[in-house]
Amino acid sequence: YEVAKKVKPSSQSRLLSGLNTFFNYLIVEGLRKNNPVSLVEPPKTGTTLPITLSISEIEKLITSFNKNRPIDIRNKAIIEILYSCGLRASELVNLRCSDLFFEEGLIKVFGKGNKERFVPIGRAGKESIRNYLKIRSKAKKEFSDILFLNNRGAKLSRNMIFIIVKKGAENVKINKGISPHTLRHSFATHLVENGADISSVQQMLGHSNIATTERYLHIS
View 1: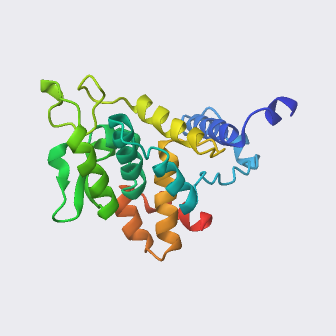
View 2: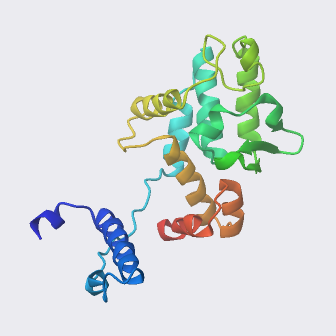
């Protein structure tokens, strides 16, 4: 029992599931007549709600890069797009110049499993990207269509996006354990709070299962 208390409920649940499958297999093979795990009550795993930022905190984070240095112009655009389009860090680093459809107010995103979706982009997002494109580094040949580049003309890493978000939070003293995904969570939460229907949010986030999106109803 003491050992069990040191194991997270989610880990206990996975272990019980494995044992349950194993004993059911033994019954099918005629090696047992009963499944002892069926008598064990599963642990209560609960629901862990993601960290989100308020709209005022988002505004502080975006303006934390409000300088005229090329790196600040780029980083401001990165924060703006992560939040206003709800992108994953991996989606952002792979975003291409040819994925921008500003006249239609859309950007094309390739999500998990390389699934394609179109996401609305607003005035502020378009303005940030246009400002960035004016000072964008000269790209290496293989990265010529990649939107966000480092100062050597190569694609940014996901780790670099984490560092940019963390640095911005430190600059404006946001004392939360945030990551690029926090901006995605905040985007979805603010949409739901302002009346967006859950299926539309699901499509914008690229969730294959609507149950994943429904947790934002609990946050709201």
